[in-house]
Image (cartoon, rainbow, N blue to C red; front, side, top):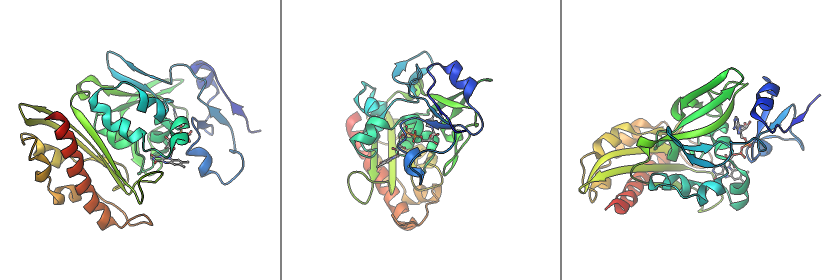
Length: 279
Ligand SMILES: Cc1cc2nc3c(=O)[nH]c(=O)nc-3n(C[C@H](O)[C@H](O)[C@H](O)COP(=O)(O)OP(=O)(O)OC[C@H]3O[C@@H](n4cnc5c(N)ncnc54)[C@H](O)[C@@H]3O)c2cc1C
């Protein structure tokens, strides 16, 4: 018989989770995905669990609880390296979705168009997965295996996203392109994080989403930006290098060619904005 579980301790949650348990956080991906009035099977609602919500500084880095909502992220006092994440938070659906939807749900749902992913890739985020047998920590890039496919095991709960202290430097920008300005699934989106000294770029992290099976970093372009002046950096971004890293698809929202073109232009704009903030 199907059950609704609402554990209040992690011990209870890990004791009750089974191979077929459907984990529920904000439900903003899970409910629309079902064609029925109710969710089938055993459902475990995580939202009463302690320590899964909120943002705190730890020795390892900044820890964002997996059940932290987009509204909470947007309103938090975070360093400029996470401005891109906060800009993304404000563009996930509308206010109601941001109040209910969580960062962990966005990552575990593993949509190629998940807006939370590029800003987190740009800060080398790792995810923490807990099961009755222990804790696993994976880089976000390794966690995302493909559309709707992650490295999460059926008995694991994502408890947190951790951003290492070394990646909390610099400024960042997120830009999303959709068919309209609000309440839209991304055609392409980018995040840029840049560090600089004496007017020159010392480090760059660029991530593009919705243009490949999972969002990814554009390492070649990142390398080419290092040493460039803040004024000229964006102009040096080579569209062919961006295109070489991507494998977009044609769908009802855009053609692959349009996505490729858009990704390079969005990266130029994101780098321009970030360099302005650093100048
Ligand atoms: C109208 C609308 C507009 C939207 N717009 C956007 C948008 O612009 N950009 C965007 O990126 N997304 C958008 N979304 C999708 C969704 O709101 C986000 O992906 C949100 O962050 C999902 O979080 P959630 O807590 O609601 O996840 P849920 O629906 O509760 O869960 C999603 C998946 O993750 C699993 N899961 C959740 N939490 C955990 C956990 N801690 N551990 C293990 N597994 C877990 C669930 O089992 C499920 O498979 C939109 C959705 C709607 C309905």
